[in-house]
Picture (cartoon, one colour):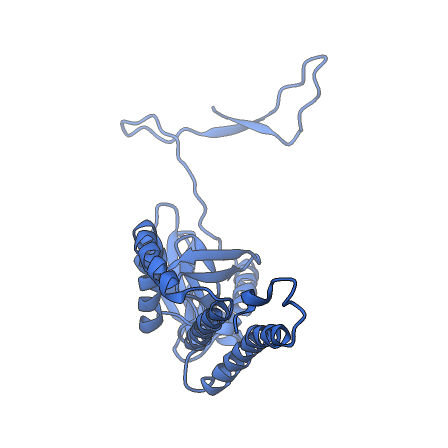
Length: 300
């Protein structure tokens, strides 16, 4: 029996009306509870067979398909003409399809991302200006939690066309640290010091070996590249420790970092202009005095 037939006041309190209402509640409440149970069962059965994003897609497929079945049964129980409803839905679907081309493009891109598997839930990715941990991979978008604890949603179409870097795809990574030292520095000594620091740091791997490369003769300094291999979970530990160790050891060894400097000349082979520091002029009456440490550089 259809529930709408018992909405009249004379039939509302009949036994048939009671059975119809109970059937309606059983389909609605029981169907939703069954969908919840099927979703949990799907996650448990696919735990060791699918990736995290695969499990998410399987769970959502079960929920969406079951939700459609429950909805159709509820509508049939309410006396809605499903044939007319499906016909109207087909016409509306065509109109909505033309109006939602972007959504369809995101849906197709999501299928490509799921099949290609460039990253998984829990990976750290960098897409454009956004870097963070992947929370979920849906058919329309990817949800990311940034390192400053913000929520970012990237449409699948943009993610598929953008340059994407999976930071934590492999178990080990290399940290590249550029180092600039003065031209008067002993190159061999710099190599020895950096190698000692790399071997003594507990977060730096011995295999692969650290990379120490004299990469360029810069404008104001010799440019070295220090490459250290580490387990991906030890990034912050290695970064914090090795930077402090380099500064302290260079100070102890008398190794000066390369800093920009300028030489003033009048040109035509003339010698460099000497520069003399003069104390700041005395403040005028009525004006607040300037900081005595400020000085002006003038050519002598």
